[in-house]
Amino acid sequence: MVGRELRNRSSDRSLDEKKSLIEAIVKVDPNIEKFYEAGRVLTGINRQVLFEAGDLADRIYLLLDGNIQVYTNNDDHELVLNYLNGLNFFGEMGFVGQESRRSASIRCRTDCIYVEMEYSKFKEFIKEYPGILKTLCEHLARRLKHTTQQISSMAFDDVHDRVIETLFQLGRGVDAISHPCGKQIRATRQEIANMLGCSRETVGRVIKALEDKGLIQSRGKTMVINYPRSYRDEPSNSAYRHEEINDFYDDDEFEDLD
Image (cartoon, rainbow, N blue to C red; front, side, top):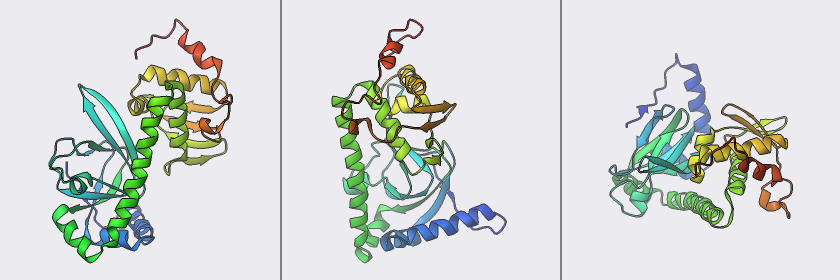
């Protein structure tokens, strides 16, 4: 699905302000700034699919503002691979790995502003600004680190710990908002379940146990994360892991759908 071109309309004051803010942000990295100037700036709306797995891979993107979801579908089950926000490249695997088709899908979680550039044009861009490859590699390294942490968590942590750690990491993200009691995030139980490959009910039970301990405040899609650090940094995990969590699994009121 094609995004809409970002137009600088004097009647749209908020769009003008956002564009000015983005222009200031991209100046942090000269390579990013040149990519921004050379590419096509587009907008996407909340829940818009930018491309799907199996689509032709022929262009690279740079997310400027907003939040996107990287996911795959298998037998009608959706698995979230990552959330990207801030300045982040995506759609680069077809260029780096020379794959002709997309291996994952991208959906906007919020209204987004991004830059797109065809691979053929990007090849020419690299010749003039080779430093963009270093910037791209740094982005890929961060992505790889995140993937490594995910695989490690799936191998060594139980589902309770994975929910706790995921909430903590979301609270550290750039989309998290400062709150008097911690960090405020917006995420549904289903979204978290899709990230972890477990049921929504499982996520709900862990969140309820954390609420009872005062480590989370939850209302609808909004949660305030109160615990100050990763449970892995707690020697005994006693601050976050509690018998109440296991008690929820013994309650006949709930049916385990995993």
